[in-house]
Structures are given as C-alpha cells and as structure tokens.
Image (cartoon, rainbow, N blue to C red; front, side, top):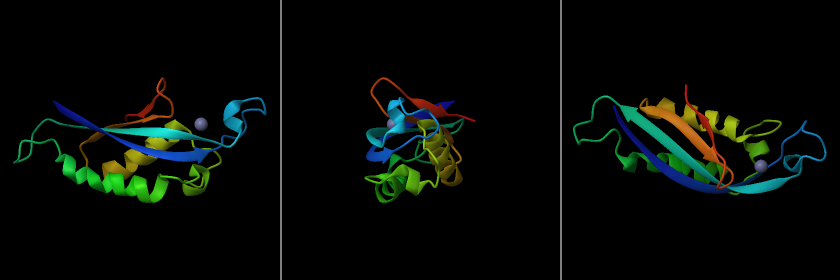
Length: 118
Ligand SMILES: [Zn+2]
C-alpha cells in the first residue's frame, strides 16, 4: 500500500455549546487549524503517484474560500463545529473528488488532533 499526506493551514473561529459556562470552548474563540489529508492506493498512476500533489490545490482553494477567517458555526450550519466534525466534513469533500482519500486529520493546537478514518 502506498500512502501520502499533505498539510494545509487556516485560521477560523468557533464556539461549542452544551459544555457548561465554565468550559473554555463555550466561549467564542479561534484556532490556527492544521488540516492533514491522507491518501492511499495499492497502485500508482501512470506518473508514479498515489495522487499528484498539484491536484490538491482544489482543497487549498476550498479551505481558503470557505473556511479561512470565517466563523465555522456559520459555515457548517452546526451548533458547534468540533475538530471531529470538521474532519468528517473535509473527508467527505475530498473523498468525493479523490477516492484514494483514506483519512482526514484536524489539529486545533500543537498537542491535539482529531481524525476521521472510515
Ligand atoms: Zn476551539
């Protein structure tokens, strides 16, 4: 199995509800998010790639145009956008374009990540 990954970055705000007033994530706040897509394939294409990294510029454009410097609660129409939900959203978006997409990982801080992997 061949596996590749690439990271993208964006900044956005979010707010989580139902956690109690003392929970820091209940307040409106922001993160410098790291998005890491992972793709895998048994076979390589005619160029020797799982996927040409150049094709992932579509994902960068989607992140820049849709998520960067936005309020994620408004963008994703949710009561609270956790990293887990964001990972699922971006996984689905990517998997529809690149079936080799095998996982999506989201970091809100240098010490944490959440992953969606079917
Ligand atoms: Zn947060």
